[in-house]
Length: 480
Image (cartoon, rainbow, N blue to C red):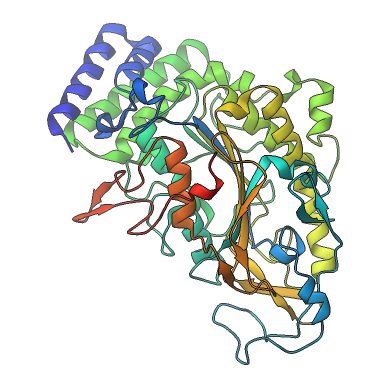
């Protein structure tokens, strides 16, 4: 950390605070000293098209995370051998670590698969809308992970480590590239209305990075998506001049504390959040107002349909946010727990269609909307999950956890559309070719953002930490 730069940034901030005062001081200070301590070294250079180490093809990202472990052989990974071997006991003799039940017989998919698009990509009947988009997607067909347990698996796909305490990808991107807007957070998380995913907020935390880079949680279903941005209607005194004066006093107290405790990232994050909140009082109401969209757009995303309403609202909001300068938006499908997610232990035939239907139309609408607005030219959409499911039955009709292989797809800027990389074995139990870990996915995403994953580091406890740890390679096979 460059202490001289950090000190200079604070003194400039204090100068503008004293010069401008009030909310004007908040705005001026935020514009000149918006990055927290140490971030000055990571401002992107214009000559690299917004990238940090090389020209960027992507400016912003929408990540769609299917919480619970989406079954590959029932969605995107067609396995005709499962039908031929259905009912045979070909699985491991002992229950693999992390699986919740005994290994059953081979179970064919109960869903019909058909080929779609010029690429001929096989897609299950549970995704009729996404099936029409396969020629715009690039598939990683041999993703794998180190665990069969939800918590560690979700940590790994989000942070690159199976243990808590490490920064998630969105936090790393915020740290490296900063915000595209002064009026909205750089990294926003839109969780399922029914609850947070496994690990709760740990999946979108900053770890050891400055605290301001954590994901900002937005409750899209609430009348106030950003809690406490405005005073409660019951407290009419907390408006106008009183609200402004309260912010001014709060910032003065925070800055006095910052002077006494230099380098405290939680305090820096608190100061930054107050600065941003002052701006969001003007920008957020418009950004979160979906009534400004046409009836056709809202219907296309599935708003007004009980099945697709929640996820569709959040996909539409994701588009509005990246359109207005948010750099990373993460949209979650499914809360933690034994129901209403992709963790289909009991009955794949009845459980999977419900959760698949809730996301299918909104995802297809998002891709079409981004394309129609020209946003696909610099936006990347990523669809993934924490692991897959077994090709063997759990009980009679369910599928257990399987980290051996699963599917991820990407679409948008810099992607070679209509291709696939890697394949799983004939049963869809383990990878066979082109094995891809989260490290490779993260390296590829960072590469598209103009970042060399080996050079984006942060020293913690004497170690230069990376999102990709000591691993990772860019999957050039899916890049255009």
